[in-house]
Image (cartoon, rainbow, N blue to C red; front, side, top):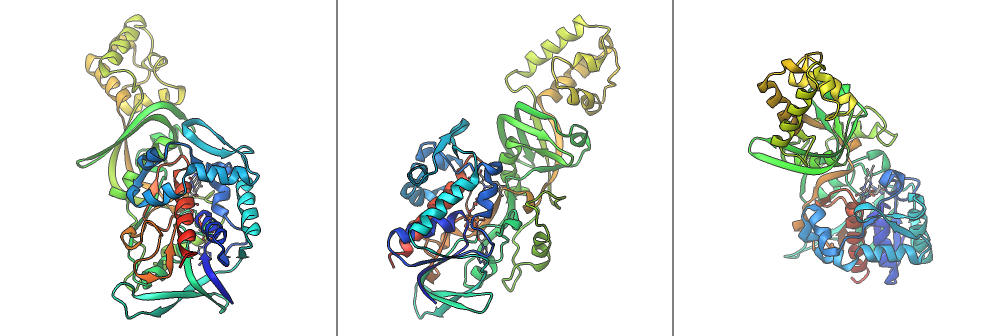
Length: 454
Ligand SMILES: Cc1cc2nc3c(=O)[nH]c(=O)nc-3n(C[C@H](O)[C@H](O)[C@H](O)COP(=O)(O)OP(=O)(O)OC[C@H]3O[C@@H](n4cnc5c(N)ncnc54)[C@H](O)[C@@H]3O)c2cc1C
C-alpha cells in the first residue's frame, strides 16, 4: 500500500495531525492499534473532556512545566481558539468553565471524538483500527544532517505501507490500557533519538504515615501545600485536596506531584542498553485493562515532607490568638471539642494523635507550648511523602523524546528525514486544565501541516 503520509497512533495528536495533513490535500493513513480512536481522550476530564484552556495564548506557556519554549511555534500556529472554532464549526459546541477550562456543551468526551472523526471522514483520511505498527521503514543516508530517511511503516501483521512521511503520535506510558503503553519508545531510540527518563506526572502521593487512611474521603478546600526535600521547596495553592487510603490526591497534590516526580521520583528511564523497553516493567503495566481502577503499584521516590497549611488566609499569630480565645472561653471542654471551629470532623479525630495531645485533655490544662504546637500544625500539618502511585494512575508521563532533536516549527525529527513526532511522547508536560490536550492538538497540527508539504 502507498500513502503520502502515515500517522502512527490515533489519539489526540494523531487525529489532529491527520486533519491538518488531509486539509492540505495529502493522502493520509491513520493507524491505531486499539479498536477505537482516542481511547485516552474518551476518559479525559472524567469523561467530559477538558479539551483546552481559553486563557490568552501568552498565558498558556505559564502552565507548561517542561519545555514551554519548544511549544511557542506550534501553539501560536494552532491555539485554543482554533481548536474551539474547529469543533464549533463541525457540530460540537463548547463551553467555558472555572479557570478557563473548556468542555463540550454536552459534557460528553465522545462528542468531541465523534466530531473529529467526522472531519477525518470528510477529508477522506484512511483509518486502520486494530492495526499495530511494529517499525519504521527507513533508508540509511550518506548525509551530514540526517542518519536515515523514513519511507513508511511495517505492521505487526507483516504488511508494509510506503509513504513520503511518517508521523509518530504514540503517546506516553500512563493509563497503558488506553493503548499508549510506550511500545514505540524503543523504535525511536533505535533510530537514534534520546529519551529523557520517564516518570509518572500529575499523580497522587503515597504517604508513609497511617493518618491519611484514617481520614479517607475527607476533602479540604482552600488549603495550601508545600513540599520540601533537602534544599528544594515547591508550593501549590490555595486549592483543593483529598485524603485517600494510600495518601493524598486532588488538584493541589497533582500539581505538586510533577515537581516531586521530576526531582525525587523513583522510576527513571525505562530503556535498557540495547534500547528496548524494559520488559518486566511494561509487561506489568499491560496486565491492567480497566483504566486504572485497580490497586496500582507504587513508585518509591526520595522521602520528602509535605505540609498542609489548613488556614492560609490567617497568620500563625492570629490563629494562636483565636485558639487562645477559644480555650479561654471553654475551659472545661475537651481538646477535641475546642478544635470544632477550626477543623472538619474527620481531621478533628486524627489531629490530637498528630500533635501528641490527648483528645480528652481539658482545655484549661493545655500548656502554652502545646498551644504553639497546635497552631504550628494547623499552619503546616506534616506528612512524609515516600513516593507516588504508578503510571496507571498518572494523568501524564513526564519525560519522553528529547525536544532538542525535534524542530519546534514542523515537529520534524532532526535525525530521521521525513519523520515527525507529536504529542505526549515528546518531553513536554503541563498542569491540569486542558493544557496537555492543547499541546497534543498543537503539535499534531504542526506535524500534519509540515509533513503534507514535503
Ligand atoms: C485519566 C486521564 C484524564 C486526562 N484528562 C485530561 C484533560 O481533561 N485535559 C487535558 O488536557 N489532558 C488530559 N489528560 C492528558 C491527555 O489525555 C494526554 O496528554 C493526551 O491524550 C496525549 O495525546 P497523544 O496523542 O500524545 O497520546 P494518546 O492520546 O495517548 O494517543 C496515543 C495513541 O497511539 C496508539 N498507539 C501506540 N502505539 C501504537 C502502535 N505501535 N501502533 C498503532 N497505534 C499505537 C495508542 O493506542 C493511542 O491511541 C488526561 C489523561 C488521563 C490519563
